[in-house]
Image (cartoon, rainbow, N blue to C red):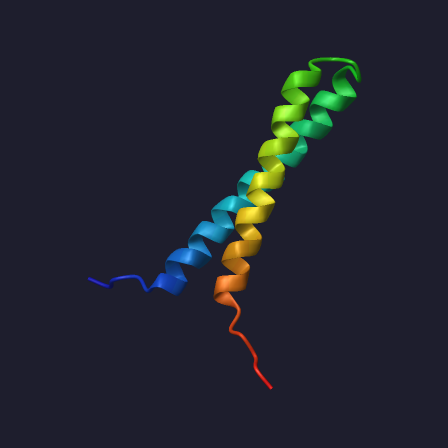
Length: 70
């Protein structure tokens, strides 16, 4: 049985977060196009979640990208 490395686990997590981010993007567009003045609170929550996902993705990407020191 193969044990996954930390890098493999982070890569899988990054893929999952990207999928969720894409789904949230579609949900936001759908909510906005359905009725622009619909549930403003729900829209704000979706956007806040999307930003949190983006921040988490950046942290993982930074961890996966090796530092290059000159």
